[in-house]
Image (cartoon, rainbow, N blue to C red; front, side, top):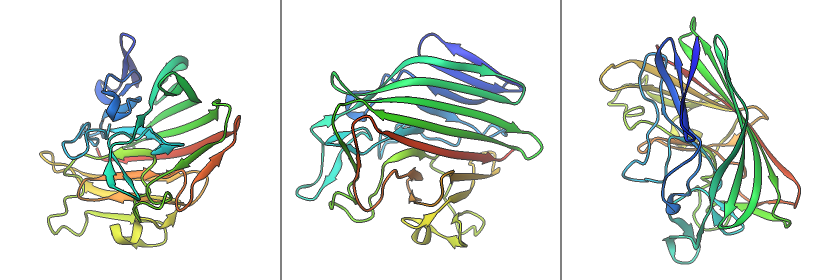
Length: 284
């Protein structure tokens, strides 16, 4: 049975059989430089191991599991510095922020919960996107797993065409196509200590970061292990619409679902950017 517990006007926690499954903070209190936005943290396996990292010392703008866009016509919704063709890494002039507007659904049933709300993506006082976000959580006790189906529709309400980019597509830093839904994992998950069972894999029999990063595949997986409990965990990342070019880091464990890869994406005024992803966490 999934149960929702409310924190006044800021966050909700979801429990399964009285064990914390995840906490969703829909009103962020992080500083502007980190592009404040809703996020999941902690996000746990059914066994109780925490799988996400929040504000790690190497990249404090990485907030567990959250939806980001690196460059929206010069506005950074990822947080922190970015790489520019001239000058290298430096702080962008503008960081955007995401603001919860209201709930459409917030309910839990036996092994399923639905969280659906509206969000405004703002550049100071200007609203660039109005997002409708749906988060469906399902538990499969027999498989020792639970899944999060994340779907978002971002409507360009700015009144102009918006260009979506990243340091790779902007010509600044090859291979740095970080943007989109971002999962920052617990530090130990991919620490392999010469253990061949700990690995990054993807569709098409790809194994290892060099083979997976930047490759086009519908899904990729982390096969990891938690500290203290020593339980094994598999995290599967899947893009419903088909292959995308994955962004993955192992030493600072990170996965991103890029909305675009080697060229910027122009989104006309009034157009929608639709994202549809599923994450499955196995480990009990």
